[in-house]
Length: 49
Image (cartoon, rainbow, N blue to C red; front, side, top):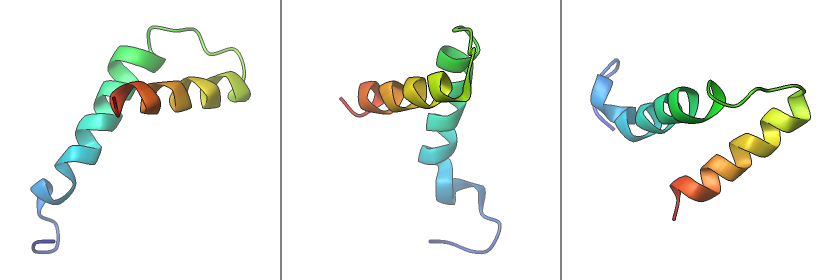
């Protein structure tokens, strides 16, 4: 951990959430909250391969 407000502290997490939103959630219609939860889980499994 660096200083308070250092942008590079959570760069990996920011990259993951950016990829999740841009490449996954915005391209697949999300009809229900449960469907979105399943998609997020699938994306996490795919991302961690």
